[in-house]
Length: 256
Image 1 (cartoon, rainbow, N blue to C red):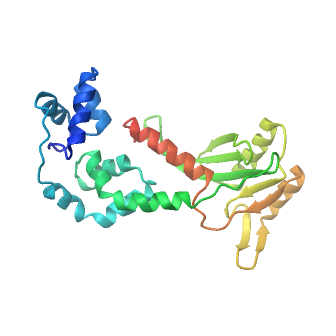
Image 2 (cartoon, rainbow, N blue to C red):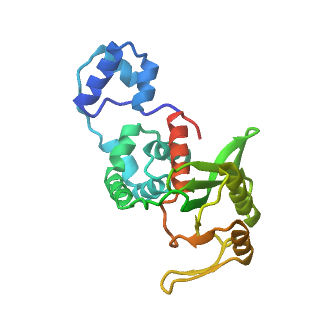
Image 3 (cartoon, rainbow, N blue to C red):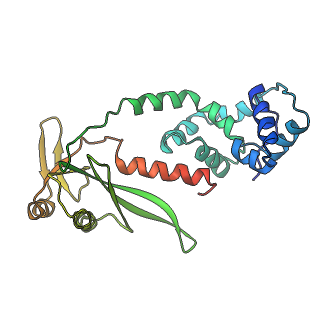
C-alpha cells in the first residue's frame, strides 16, 4: 500500500532529497530510505523548493488513536517503522515513517531514559551464564509460526548459544543448557534464570525466599553450577534485546 501523498515538513528534508539525487540515488531508493512516497521525491527533485503545509489532517488521524499508538510503541520497543506497519494493518491508516516518529517522540524520550537506567552487571570469567526464553514469529513453509528461542549468554565474554524450539518446556531449558556446556567445554559457577515455572517453584524478593524446581535443582547438582533467579518482572533480558534487534532488522528490510 502506498504512503499518503504530501509535501515535506522541513527544509532539511527537501535538502536531503536533493543531495541524495545528486549522488545518483534512484527515486525508489530515496523513497525507501526516507520512508516517503516516490511522488514526493519526484516533486522535490524537480522543484527543489521547500513548501510548508497544513499537517492538521494527518495529525488528527493519529490523535484519535493516541492510546493505541503508545501501546504499540511500547510493545515493539520503540520501533516506529513497525508501528507504521501496524497502523496500516489494523487501522487502515497509511502515513510516512516521519509522521509516526513525530507522533511517538514524547514516548521515545521516556523509553531512552528507561534504557539508560539499566546498568550492566559485570562478572568475572567463568562466573555466570544468563539463560532467557523469548518468542518470535517466523515463516516456516510459508506459514506464519511462533517459535521459542532459548538464548544463553556468558556474563563476561557475552558469547552466546541460541537454540530454537516449537515449545517452551522444562526439557527444552535443560537441553539448551546441556548443549551450551558441551559447546563451550565448560560449566559456569552460576546460571542466572528468569522465573519460569519450569525452573522456579517460588521466588519472593521481599523475603529472599527462592525454591528451585526439584528436577532443575538435580540438573544443577549434576553439572555443578548454582542456579540463581533474577528479580521478577525485570524487562531488560538478553532474549528481549535479541528479539527486538531481530524485529528491527526485519522491519528495515520490509519483512513482517
